[in-house]
Image (cartoon, one colour):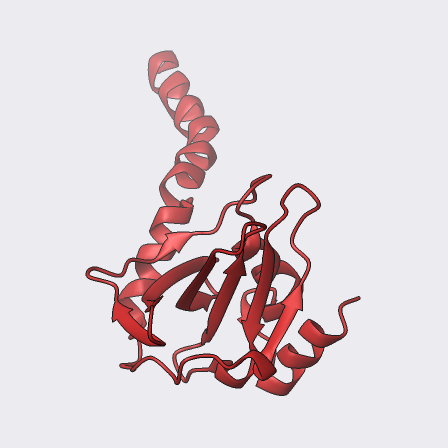
Length: 170
């Protein structure tokens, strides 16, 4: 009888902990569940950016690069992805142009195409979503996510609101 009592007491003491372990989900589990229920929209690259549509935004004092978004290419898809053209200008005059997407729900970014000489696009061979990390360098995606495109896990309501945030940062 004493042994049975000990076993029952032990089970009652351990049960809440076991329940917490089995019901606890990890970030990977949440992302996997969201990905299964989510379908990305099909798309083509927009028109190549024109200087008049470019809006500069501050990233960090640790870089001499300038970062610009083509406000004319900003869109919020039915799939919840903010799409845009990013232009990065180096201090030496080099320029990188990319057509990208940023998914607020999962804090991820994806390259769709890269700009080529002659104002044409070269599609990315195997575009993949990448988690946005906060780094000291190359933090443009983290800044876009936190300061301009996303209101928590959702994009801001309108393209106009995002463009205003870019033009008049707080």
